[in-house]
Amino acid sequence: NAELMQHCSTLNEYAQYVARVRHYATDMPLNQAVERAVDECIQKGILTEFLTRNRNEVISMSIFEYDKELEEKKLRKAEYEYGFSEGKKTGFQNAAMETARRMLKSNKLSLEDIADFSGLSIDEIKQLQNTKS
Picture 1 (cartoon, helix red, strand yellow):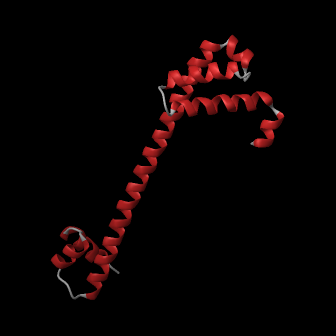
Picture 2: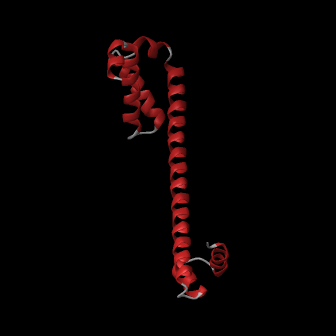
């Protein structure tokens, strides 16, 4: 929030620090990125007093929090991909069942042909046949 950043210099400076960590973390190991960001912020007058006084704690917490953030992103991505994959499977299964129902309704194809076209097993076709309305 840009307006909030204008009214709170500490928050603005913290955002600058975090941006530096993220920038450097793309090109170097995380611990080096954090140390470089801390050094640079101190040199540029960003959170200087706090970073100088609490350097070791800031570095430790930044590494921990950044690792946690990355792991949470990876977990969300994996969960999304799993959900997408499961949804896709369900969609294909529903489409195959609908295709088989229509073929059964036509009474023009054998169960074997319906199974071949739909990708369902003979047993699944028989179940649909017994439950069709």
